[in-house]
Image (tube, rainbow over all chains, first blue to last red; front, side, top):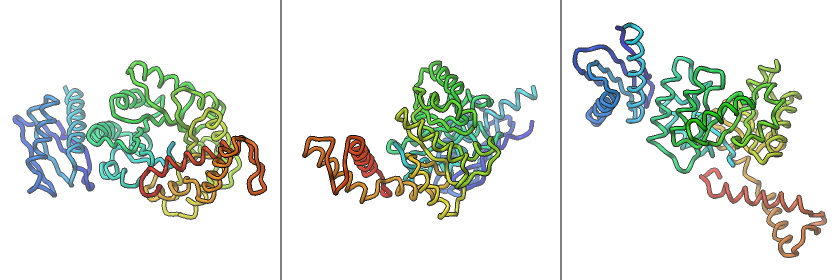
Length: 89
Length: 280
């Protein structure tokens, strides 16, 4: 299936790309990587867990997004990912 | 009562989290016109997360939902009912739309204040019923959409538009609701903004919507009672208390009950805004 892309590369936002994978993989590119990579990864993991999605590849390109933005973009990506999967099955 | 209402797109994190900086009396998080049809879900998720994580107790946050008849109406209402939002801004308001909203509020066991955007010729045929509706806190003029509906060019000096503005103010005041002028769409034209503000004040509007943060300060300042008028209102009020009378002369002018009531309202408005941010 094709990858789902949500969000933007504007300041204070992030772009999330979600695609199928056999295991959970999280790739993070961030302008604040050194200071916040652990926190951002935690928000991504927590949102996936809450939404019950485990085997996906997440690429997060972060431009200084706060936690609420990362969580919101993840939720949208997951909803669209599921919708696309349902359409294909 | 708010002087300035700042619209902020519900899908732009940078603007959402900076909205409070501009000292608007009310922030309106927008799910409608400033969000493209393909990004409505994105905007709902972002608005949801933003309002839950950043509750701003000092500035009321309303959410402009999509109109009745759109695919998003019901989903938007459900979302707002679950949020710590101050209320709803309803575009293309009609009596039917308010009744449908009322039903959805009941189903969701929620009750929120509503500002209705009056922006169609049809809405003006029932403006008194809209203003009287129990959910309505205020009416906002939607001059752009109304002008499109009427086939006129919006702008200063258009008689039909000014007739609509007067009708909105009369209906709102008749039912003790707020009357909010349409935003100035000329983002960098200060002269035009000032002309619109002057007209809105002259016509009796209680506030003005803003689509650019740079407009907020001018609106806040303009809708504050001016010092000279406030001083006179205080003298009128004090003299009426001193004389225990609602009919007397002051500076060669006859003062009666409506003048005293107006003076009291002006003092109350000044007191309310004095407690708010720096531009007040």
